[in-house]
Length: 391
Ligand SMILES: Cc1cc2nc3c(=O)[nH]c(=O)nc-3n(C[C@H](O)[C@H](O)[C@H](O)COP(=O)(O)OP(=O)(O)OC[C@H]3O[C@@H](n4cnc5c(N)ncnc54)[C@H](O)[C@@H]3O)c2cc1C
Image (tube, rainbow, N blue to C red; front, side, top):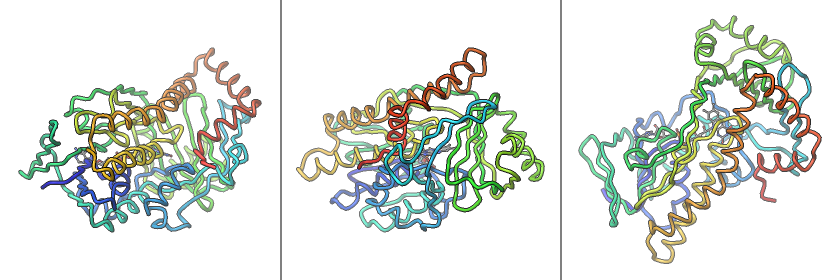
């Protein structure tokens, strides 16, 4: 099978990239190891994805936004950052970002379903599911992918969007800086008594990190970060005991709480690829930049990278130029690194500092939050970074 572009991985980034390339005369293949039913009706995975204004615009352009019911899109008006047991919070107001809201929250399963629907509606995209890759190699002429079922695929450009643990990145000999925080994040949806006012909480408590992401109604996505063994205990608790344990962890600030979904655990491992491109090859989504979720930017960067790379490819194709020229891939690498590296490093530093409970760190945590809250230009900068507003 021959295509212009072969994308490995039909996660939200791979599907968005395929859709971004659609409609310009290129033939696109998306290779996914899962079966088609898992893409058509993705299972709830606990993740509520905070999307910036830029991401909302890109999702509209890709035809994903219109496939999501407006009642499933929850506005994120403000954000509050707490430290330790204190009730003091750094407030990031939507007015700091000069918008009606900081962003939006949508369940990852709904984003994936919308992206699948948009791809299926694109006649120039071939989705190959149940595809197990046995080898990949590239040369100056093209990319050559062999599947375990004996089929082979040739493309002018191969793009790996096969998660932060990308096997394709490894097979192509691209190293990555990986950091294991030694913690696990548990996510689930809960109802609670006290209204959230569409405000997100990031609570760097001592011995635990909590987050609350407001969903429409009296419901929120609850995120608890602890050592893996402690998360295992929470995951295994009967529902009633779990509800009481979470109420206690939130110091009853939300009143009575009730689990309304399955619970999901994710090890906290971040990844930044040392290179984003190779010969007739590029990395996209988490395979390039696997963010720490605390600043909620993983998929936002996935969409931004898809936009950057697809814009370069479509411009080259329109001129009749090579869609995998080294200069083109180098431009993508440079732009995406520039867009992602500062926040990746800042997120890492925040996660390290606010995950540290030693007395000097506690002092620094307290002082930086108070100082941050009192400096309006700082808060405006944070709001602009979080919203990625373009007006
Ligand atoms: C708890 C949590 C909360 C998050 N919150 C936010 C948030 O608020 N905002 C935000 O922007 N981001 C958030 N993220 C990050 C976001 O979920 C990821 O950035 C996004 O899912 C990455 O998409 P992807 O398509 O690159 O990779 P994935 O979603 O990992 O998809 C990869 C796909 O590739 C397939 N695959 C893997 N290996 C192969 C192979 N060898 N061959 C073929 N197919 C393969 C997989 O089956 C999968 O379908 C969060 C993440 C977590 C864990």
